[in-house]
Image (cartoon, rainbow, N blue to C red; front, side, top):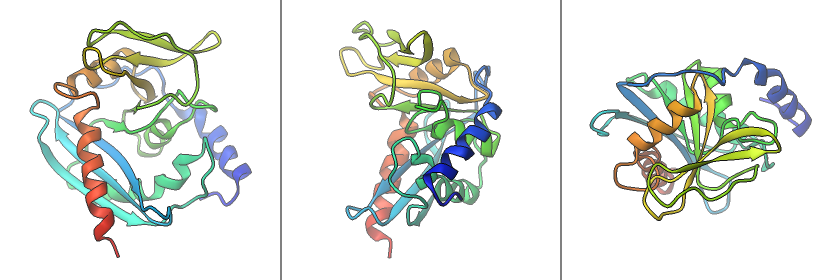
Length: 218
């Protein structure tokens, strides 16, 4: 793990060319994993959770948690270094290897074009993309009010992702590719994972798990 901000940025710059931003990625994965991290109020502890869902029924078929301390300081654009060790530990604890990773965060839609979804995808080799609740970078116009409507998330002439409406009349989410996944496919997977709520079931299940694990942690 890097020890300084400069070292962390250098790692991102070194790994960024390894991210496959074209895909196409699995269009009918059997299993999909959600990844999320919860922090204690003091910010000195975290719980990283991975839940593996049956992509057809959205039932949880495996899950794992890793509790520890943030591995890096609080620096915008370098969140992956705080959470990556614990998330990788949780992934290692799984008995079911997921075919796709859905991160609570961003991939390409990052100041250095290498967010958590890119980092996790490159390190694990698994297809990955990010679904953010709020944008980290870029400009966008509101998509149409209907579920499935979208608009591009842009930084100048560069398209970083899509602003996707998952529920009629509800705030959109921000989808960006991470590794071995096309943007079209990532958005299709998000819609498949949001039959009832704004956020994907992968994110919702991982969020519940890490929040439950944190209060019980020593």
